[in-house]
Image (cartoon, rainbow, N blue to C red; front, side):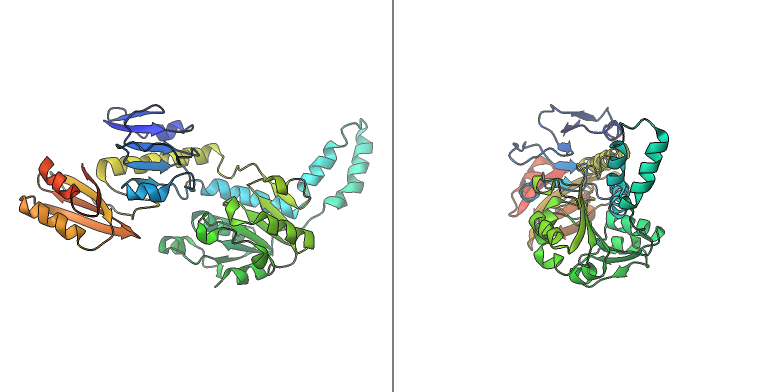
Length: 390
């Protein structure tokens, strides 16, 4: 029986992915094999010795101590792309809100609530509507920073709206490149993109390399009156620099999903309450993907969408037993493990080995289940972090 401890409210559709006959799932599970969560901060929470994996139903993992978990052989999953459509649609809403005087216009209409005469109200509206005139998105240039699952969908949406789309992504993956329309112009650096864009939409993770990537220096090269949209993470943008650029008249508007006290009450800032992925469909998609990844890892040792271990998977060999082990990515570890198996007449039927940064992961199918003494010998190998028999 596998045990999964949940944090936060997880969609029922995700929870239903765990077969009831083989899984125990709940918020008060003792000795869990896995955590399933959304926004719960795991920093400071005791790590059970039984914990094998953590799945975050969402893309960001800043609430998970990823590096510390990796050192303990705990695989951390996220769900990239599961909430992409929800974020994409909110980006479109942000662009429309910034292009037209929609919010100010609606507020003006509500200010007329004391007028009872329809003709009088109509005359006032007709007289005032020019104050809320804006421009169309068609023909404007959208610059997308980060061309992953969300960025590529935003690009397709903007192209369909008749916009010119350019993008910058220094670590564009092969999968992301295949998804990307050939109509998207590739920029060689961030500065080139900023200088050519009427709208700039950010879709990069919050890591050390991207912290405050939008700052005084980068904002100095943006096109006059450009609109900056941040539906990625607050740490990517330096709010003080944004305010200085707005006050100077360089930056036209800032649209974000991360309100901060210093951003409120500013006429050229549209701040939303972090609702980018908050749709029923998005939460269901994230929960289902996270649950599926946990099941495949717990039952087969396969890893997909991990943020600390490599992508790795192998079909089960009929009639075999499976050994998986995580180790520090140093030479000689795999050879020593294979020697232990050979010395104990444990024949390897199939195997795969992958590495990512300082960590490596191995899946081996063997003809017969190894005894406890064999597994103990593998655990004793220097640099082996965690061993499982599935």
